[in-house]
Amino acid sequence: MKRFNDIRSDRFNQGANMKAVLYHRYGDVNVLQMADIPRPVPEANELLIEIHAGSVNPIDWKLRQGALRLIRPLNLPAIPGFDVSGQVIAIGSNVRTFKVGDAVYARSNKKAGEASAEYIALPEDVVARKPSNMSHAEAAAVPLAGLTALQALRNLAHIRTDATLLVNGASGGVGSYAVQIAKALGVRTVVGVCSAANAELVRRLGADEVIDYKTADPLREHEYDVIFDAVSTLGMRAMGALRRGGIYISTLPGPVLALGNIIGLFGGKRARVIMVRPHGADLEFLRQMAEENKLMSVIDSEYTLEQIQSAHTASQAGRARGKIVIKIQ
Ligand SMILES: NC(=O)c1ccc[n+]([C@@H]2O[C@H](COP(=O)([O-])OP(=O)(O)OC[C@H]3O[C@@H](n4cnc5c(N)ncnc54)[C@H](OP(=O)(O)O)[C@@H]3O)[C@@H](O)[C@H]2O)c1
Image (cartoon, rainbow, N blue to C red; front, side, top):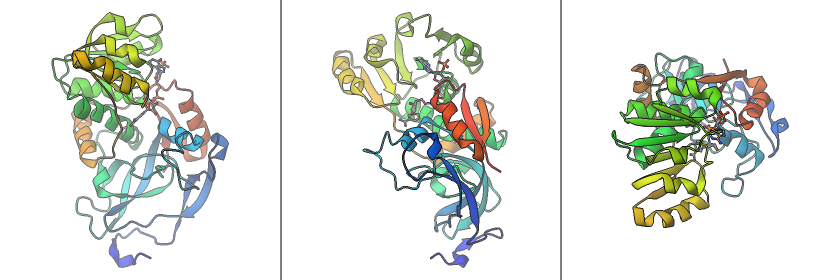
């Protein structure tokens, strides 16, 4: 049991309850239920955050369905949700970077996420200050999808400013940030792939060219240095559209990675999968981008915590234009 004097706050009410979304078994959206459960108590290195907004990512419903239970089994009951924007209301005794009252955002490091709730306790190294020019809803859209895009383009691709980049799924959560991050990093040519209805949006996000995947084949239009397949639909054919030394990055593991690397051997081409990591310093980087007006969130729709079933249903449809946000307090 944590001693109260290990925690610095004038608002921390130990033993108080909170509203949270809970599922007791894997299944469809109907397993998501509202519950009244004890608020988390922050460890010495943790912040207690009052969550103002969260967002839905496909991982939330994949975990809930049990699709990943062999590689990532959950301790049920579980609280879904990985994205958080809110206010620090208490800090553990070892926290150095943040103080009570700070507006922050984060990608949770918990196994099931635990962010579809009123409060969450997170270690300070996964948290960053919220972009001051974003609302909590806009900031909560960023962490998981924005970190995925940043870590794919910067850490895996080591993308250069003279590169030609293809972003497949450019109107979705990951893709909409990838287009903007690539332009903010100075990438010369960004080609976005989306359906015609989203073409204008993707152009506004900074894409130099937009290809409608329903009427044209983006892999026949150009040769690319980097193909970031945010929705993982291109498969092996992508290797043939890479220039010598190019890299194909997928968001989902699959046979294309092993086979793609064999096929790519002679052209020095590589195939990789991005596995996003919670990372406060990377979120600081994205905060600066946002405050320099180089990064914005596209909000597809907003739901309350009580409407979580509808929010998951909308994400599962696979047509989100930007991000699906959960407004909490
Ligand atoms: N490995 C990791 O660390 C990691 C991290 C984040 C996400 N992911 C995975 O990455 C995938 C994408 O995530 P997300 O959050 O970006 O999903 P999302 O926002 O739900 O994606 C929806 C978007 O995908 C577009 N889309 C659907 N089919 C398409 C196609 N055939 N070609 C081009 N665009 C298409 C839709 O546009 P239209 O309606 O116009 O078709 C829509 O805008 C998910 O499978 C997710 O689980 C993995």
